[in-house]
Image (cartoon, rainbow, N blue to C red; front, side, top):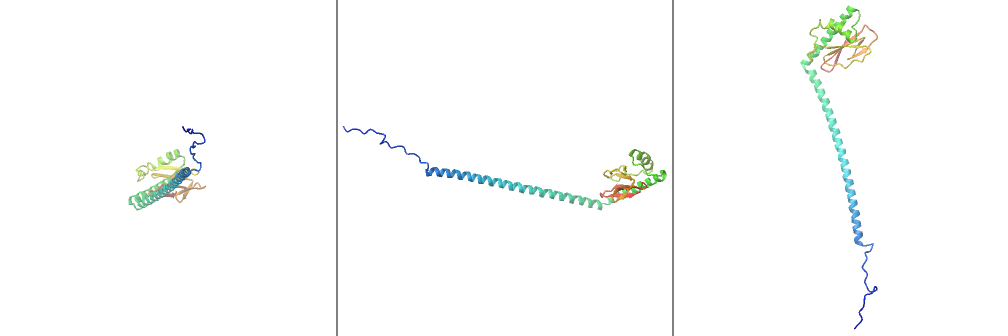
Length: 207
């Protein structure tokens, strides 16, 4: 019998080992890197696109706000034109001017009777002037818009006049008219009164 060849370590083929420089491994790594780069680029593009959309949205909001502001100004201008053109409003304002003339005439009468102008202290002004020279002598002393008696407001020389409203008249002593505003003066022989018109203008008369 022929002797059988027993396998020895020398004639056993070793298992093939993967080489570190396997081309397939390189391709996988390159593909992974490429995918990551694509994702980064896409993500950056989406961010830029969102920023651009946000910017355009802000611009659109600004344009809308400016449009609303312009429309508001146009509406106010049209309302003022309507007020100027309305015969009823014109008649109302003419009555207010006439009533203010009555008011200043009553103030002059008070000065003639008392040798001084009415006090600007509210309680004294009402008791000594309004209750004596206005209420009993001017029964139709009513604002045509509010349908109520005029609110008569005394203003001291050093006092900042409150905002005037429809249905009210203001009186300042000592003072005089400076356009639609009161002007403080040192001469206590001067006084002024004013009323708001429906046109938005303030009509002022020196007493």
